[in-house]
Image (cartoon, rainbow, N blue to C red; front, side):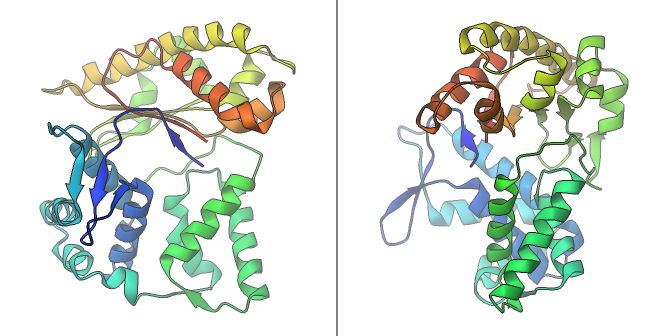
Length: 312
């Protein structure tokens, strides 16, 4: 499970008057269904940037209470889709067809196309996740299901995979800076982390311009030659120093972009809980607090609008 770093929680008021926390993952799933229903499966990777853009906008609106109506949320999504020249997707999202009528067949090629751009996991792990989903579908005699079910199954199995390898797929979205361009000007210490698989930096897109950093704790452990059990108090200073390296990389990216306004930054630590389980002597009940402390240390020197700090 991905845990966002504590900040003001945006709430959505439903049409029946009830409130619930804004769920970017649920919105992303709805958007993916809309892309598929519109026959734009090859562009469905844009759903993540749209969901992030909406979340960022809602969290920065000045209101006494961060509560928005369901109608406001849907209107914001539809406006973004239309501005991105996706009126057909916007129309389907408005009608809600993606949630009620679209089914995806349990064929390997079909599911692979659906899931590949929505799991931030290495190629080897992706193939294992796909195999598990297909096996489960055969055992349960499921021949077709909603995109939401397939995505939730994929996320469930992906979380169960312990191995983490820094092999990621570049998405074919227009960028103001590509991943390769960013790698070319990284400072030496950040480049060393990148080459060792401990750091990944997404290209910066035009849809939601932000700087998205991924830090892999297990690869960092190999670089630092850590041996379990590791003491949290000794680990935090090391992560704080690494934070300075991340900040130097972030600052260079921001300078290259020469944006008229500071870009939001996202720091994701996808294997934090796996790292704690393997390297720290901690039971499950205390893992999330330790993870939050270590994540805070890793973000300690980031001098920017840290929009999201999350770990899983």
